[in-house]
Length: 233
Length: 134
Image 1: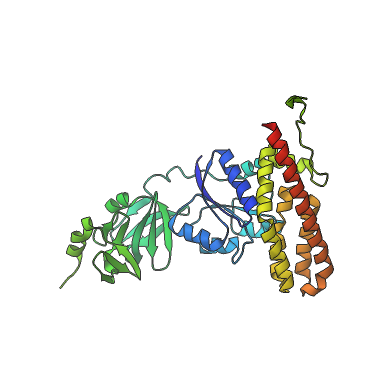
Image 2: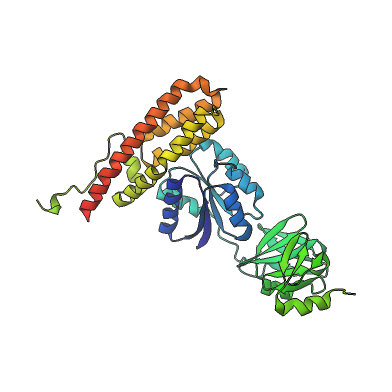
């Protein structure tokens, strides 16, 4: 098992200790340490990790606030010095609850509780394509997304983010793979990191287009094709 | 006297729980030195937050600041101080105003300063001990 993780913890010694446990285990790659929730959220908005070690009480916002705002559901191990949070931990379906300071053995026991990734997680996560919809696997469920609801699809390394007007869904896939799977009538690749819903474009500039206020780059290689698809008078 | 006569084990201050230290770090004294250094590097800032919260008459901030510093005494096995921090934190939740806990505050403040002295002394001793192990 090799998982990516971040540490969200405002006490430096606790973060250092945890970081060392992660290194020692040989099972985790620590992608960052954040001492406050906003910094962690900013990172998680553009990066996907498998696991978060999350302190609860931090300046400005709590660990539970982070869980309320995050767009996907990585595994979470709470690290706190307050046993009273155990009930909330249960409510948030966290994998385990480590009371600081914990021993290395207790840390390893927590890692053992992380369920193995589904065997198909590295496969194409779009299971069915239709004319007007797709099904994606996200958070262990099959979710139907109507083409008309999808604004754009953005690459995030080994993952992609489906952005709708209501919600964002992150799933294991690549833009290259999706390019073949999504409806060519509704979608077009405009950049190596973006496939967009052509009906959702509000305006286009020299090297970019706007969808719901978000500027999306158009690469030179795709520009002609994009212009061809638009109903330009 | 050669280096073979140097003590193989470090004897910690009696207020530090040896079993708790061993359970966290085994006998990796270099790592314990590192942990103590990190703690001392941040101690004053975290301690100031406690003082500031008290001076500003903010119970919520006082509770949070003590809560933040509390695990430090777990990592240094000063378990009585850790437990007293927990009691003080609970006390903050039970009262309406900082003025009600002036005496416990003075007590915990002094205990935290004493704890810092212990950590500082143990850090200095560990540094010497580890240097002599090389």
